[in-house]
Image (tube, rainbow, N blue to C red; front, side, top):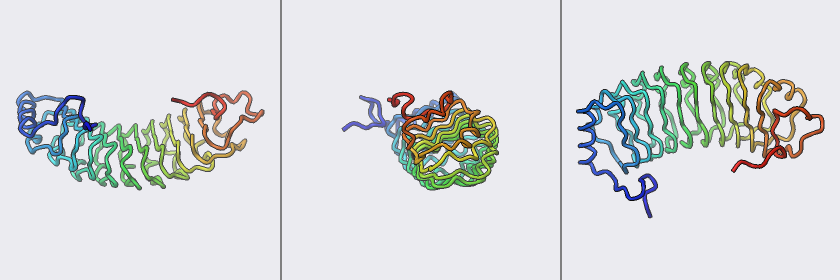
Amino acid sequence: MGDHNLPTGVAPMELWELEKFLEKAIEESRKVINLSHRGLTIVTGRLAGAVNARNLLLNHNKLLMPPQEMCSLTNLTELVLDNNMLTMIPSGIGQLSKLRVLSVSHNPLVAIPEDVANLTSLQSLWLTNCQLSSVPSSLGQIKSLRKLGLRSNELCLIPEELCNLQNLQWLSMDDNLIKDLPTGIGGWVELLYLSLNSNRFEEVPLTLQNLPSLVSLHMRRNNINSLPDDTIVALSFLYCLDVRENGIIQRPVEWKGLDFIVTGSDYEEES
């Protein structure tokens, strides 16, 4: 069977080839170092010399340990480690003070180091399918964060401290074990999009009315059997409230004109 992390017909990169690649990248002061889809199991120490790199792409390899040398590349603005076999992020990651995008999705991380909070320029953090049962409360210190992806983990609770992310605009926590939201979510004053599909909610939390910028709320595949009138009134400012695949099978007559509420009878399933 072929290697799903390698394009068809491409052989894994040998260590000597990696050394030669990095040597040339350093010599040419490359800003983008793309080592994705190379079948790599390790990255050699020569990476530390790529001090001018702005974008480091190591996704779709076979890395068990992230290269510690990447933490010395303080000019990085983008670091992509998706689809490896990483069980940790190096604790020195917080040294990357210019980093704006960090993507570590589809790795069995289990935990996130506390010093991720030191990424003071970070705008997008992607942690999809990382087997996380919790996220550190220190994430709430990343005031610059605008997009946060926590889909397909094992989260039951969201730390109250995450409500301090006042610039957050996009948040996905689909496919977790969440039953309720933190009481202080009114701190998400810039949040436009919130996706909570495939969780354990039994009702649409009334606290969502405290999100002044929210436009789109997705709560498909939960355990919601009704929408009380006070909830509908409180959330009538939304452009979209998607509650398909819950216990609400048909739209009540009194919902006529409430087109922002999307139920299972409104349009066919997405493909």
